[in-house]
Image (tube, rainbow, N blue to C red; front, side, top):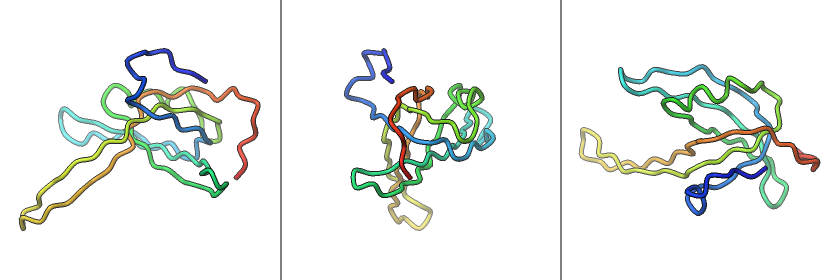
Length: 112
C-alpha cells in the first residue's frame, strides 16, 4: 500500500500489522481530542511487537472505517517532546502519531 501525498515523503514512516484494539476517542481538553489504536506487528527478527498509536483531532474518525483483526498499513510520525514537571524535573515523551490508515491489501502473510 502506498500513500500518495508527496509532502509525506521523508517525514513519516509506514507501519504494517494487525489492528488489535480500537479505543474510543477521548476529549482531553475543550479543543483537543485523541484516539488510541493498538497494532500488532513484528520486527526484522520476527519478534512480535505491540504498538500503541495515537490519532489526534479530526484524524480520530479514521479508525471508524476499520474493525479489530483487520490487516492495516498506517502512516506514522514519531513525535517527541520535553516537559518540566512542578518539581523542575525534566521528562521526555515519545508518541507514535498516526495520520493515515488503509487496508493492507498485500498478499504477504503477517506472521505473529
